[in-house]
Length: 380
Image (cartoon, rainbow, N blue to C red; front, top):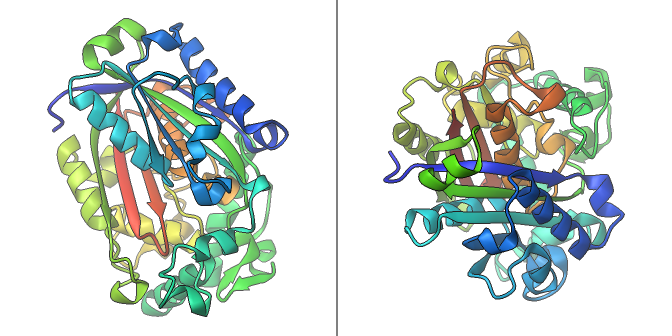
């Protein structure tokens, strides 16, 4: 278990449409202001600020320098985490655990509408001498993974399509979503081929988004709110840099999840977790990650798709927000999973609320085929 109790006391997010139509600095300011207003504190009350953005995804060096004062970081103890919003959350946790800060605000921003195509940007993740020259990017890496997964376990295109149908339908209840709708399996499997066997409606959109989370020590949390969300367990891990050195169906997620469960005292995740927000950019990955999170046996992800277990009304709802299928601000999406999981525990997820949530799981994946995974267990 964690050496100190730490809670999420407030969250805030701004969706694609509002971020797209506004200045980056303005939406960063509005998100942080919204966060502080929820618990009626001021910038001066913040101990530290950790922000996640990306020089690639913002198109400038030192990307945080553009908006740092807008999130209240001027003359504050603050840091930037490159790329993954969930990693910024981990860093913020360490700051509270250090004992030096009672409150830490976590912030993440991506404005995909102002940068090149995701294929161009993710191709930069490859090694410049051995990987990048042959055009590997996020979707082609996922296509290799999908082919292997479907072949090894007999997963059908229809089982995968049901995930896209579910998530896009769930997104109708999410006011922050970028893409949503009542699609059919036929709509998904006849949509344009993006990278075999992945269809265009199995792929995430290129989204804008910003979100913020406020962490507090146990003592401070009790002062700030009567509805804290406790961080019960967390872990993160990364795999080999070279995709050819990895088993794409045996990611670090299983190890990361097991350590997070042990910290949280969870022995049967399928029965003890009431809702999961999984970062699965491509539909097939939700099935694969459910297996590695221990929600079913290896290779049985297709059954979860068919038997309704992970539907909103199922035994273990997955991505009631619509997940990354619906909204994909690349750097912010991991922290958005934390925000959505926290809202579920707070009972504040509005029309996407799952009943009686006492434990929620937030997951983030980053890099080719899920090179980096983070798992955070939140609870009452």
